Length: 254
Ligand SMILES: [Zn+2]
Image 1 (cartoon, helix red, strand yellow):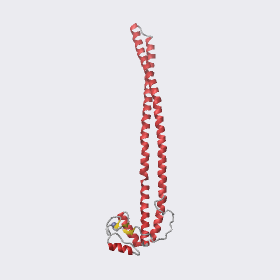
Image 2 (image 1 turned 90 degrees about the vertical axis):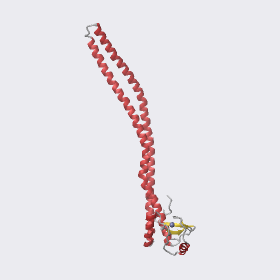
Image 3 (image 1 turned 180 degrees about the horizontal axis):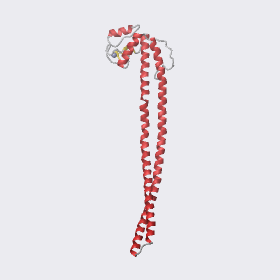
Image 4 (image 1 turned 180 degrees about the vertical axis):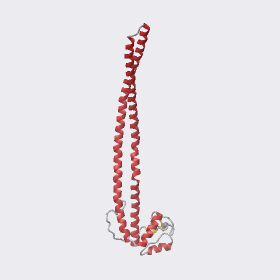
């Protein structure tokens, strides 16, 4: 394999990895949002339980108000009863007082019920708070993990870019331009010859082109169908000596 093809293959490998890393980095915000969305159900659950408890407290305050007013009524009626002139008037006061006292008693019963319900409701709220706390910690850990993975991606991306820049600097300008043009149009600029086919478009290559490929001493030839730069997959690279500055050019590894 010519040095040119060897360089082109290595640049392509870099670009593939740069593409993958960039995509993963770009997906982070969406990924974090999806993780955090898991908390929403727990937050709604807690809010519902808190609302039930609040309603219970409101009901109790309302009952307490009613009882307070009934007590005032009783006191007023007892005072007025002193001035009753007839037995009928007296019995009417007694009747009204008894009615108000019943109201007080039933109100007090209902407050007791509410207080017992409140205990269960408070437990519900505490449980929902605990669930939310546990889920919150889980989510925070997942988000932290995602962020640290992306931080590692960013470091690797920087290393890939610097390796690529070194490779690109060694490639002749017209070939670099050819590569860039095909890469932009096709997503990948180079394709292996597998059997007698272009691996990208699967078209069988002309025997003359295959022969020219075998005799190629420098430069590159392209597939006549898809336009990609061709190379023989099983041909060893001719050893482009290149320092790997980041020590991470063994691609695909963390
Ligand atoms: Zn092709």
